[in-house]
Length: 495
Ligand code: NAP
Ligand code: MG
Image (cartoon, rainbow, N blue to C red):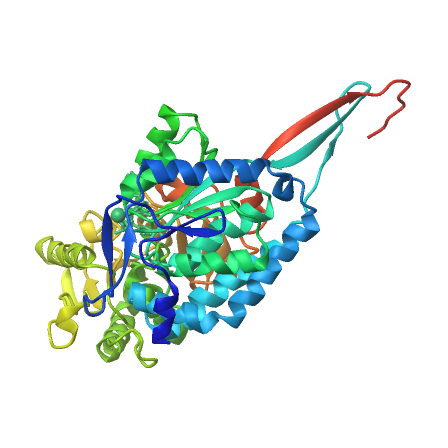
């Protein structure tokens, strides 16, 4: 597997289906977060090369080879891509684990198959969305066309690099847009490896271009007048900058998938075995670096102690290790900066009076001291005013908050600025459904956690985002609707 890294050119960006090696441009190192070693180098793409990428995407958007392509052929390209990725899934799982620090077992079972599924799913949509005829007053035929938005800037984070690329690329391409992809500065490798697969699948040149770099490169895309839309996943802070950039340039469309502080609400009649397992993996999967992490356990006081005890025992047994070891269950955080951020939240939990039940510090024994490992952590006696109850930590830290009444549980669940996902645990289905309606979140799981499907919409209430990705709903994000009117004489139309 090690030779895979050699297939990814260093200091290259992808324009017009070819590698381009920018001249006189600063470079930076890509780090293996589990041991601090340099695994590659990339360029900080500057305005000259961002302009080149945007010009290519703009031209490709107007090129009949793409613009007038039969929807069936567009679907075939996406389907071929899913087949190529299926063939190469082990390579992608390896690269994702190496670059991000996530356990190889998770990259194999979650990231890569879910991404492949996205391309396959949207391959089917190209031939299945169309026009609507609207029953307007008067002798007119009024119908709609759904047309691509244009050049899409896809700006994605480091926690699920390959999957987040798929969440943007699959619907954007299915609807006929062109895309400039800007992966996170830390995790560009799987996106770089993807580029030749897109070409092999038959995507015309310029339909997908890729630039690497830091936030400055992302900002150049967001401020470019020829970019029609930004599809973003990441932090609230950068989302705000993107909205300003849009407002100050060409009012480009913006869709946002931001963070969360998602609750698992557990009632005493819940199936405790299932609760323990789901709450556990809800916070420790991908080391807690998940927008949908179940970072708050809102639990009835009558069952808190028994659940907490079991969670704590499980956390102590979790196998921390080299992410590439197939037995590893929790890998390394993405960077020193993220490690320090998680550590500072753990400190604030203690300072603000929460009870540290387990974990709470970085892993310092060899060989983990060279990477960015943090212990699986649980805080009990958390109250809603604490930082660890309100802010997205993006690490393996669970905040346990106790409740006594249903109203209190709902009020606590709705007490943050976020609203991405939530879960309700009870055998009383009527109660669960009633609560599901009252929680402000884009997804509510009842008696399970972390289920996703390309067909089901995903996105946030409140400050967790704008718009819904996946399913039919993503077509809304990547198309403009045109209303066409035709007078029809001698009409007895009854539409
Ligand atoms: P971030 O700063 O929001 O980065 C996300 C993407 O935006 C990256 O590609 C980033 O490039 C780019 N970017 C940064 N500044 C930009 C700008 N001014 N204009 C356009 N693009 C810009 O997220 P982060 O620093 O990676 O993580 C910080 C926090 O964000 C995390 O601790 C977590 O709370 C949250 N987060 C949420 C999600 C999620 O799934 N919702 C994912 C990741 C992080 P660079 O990588 O080069 O900075
Ligand atoms: Mg950043």
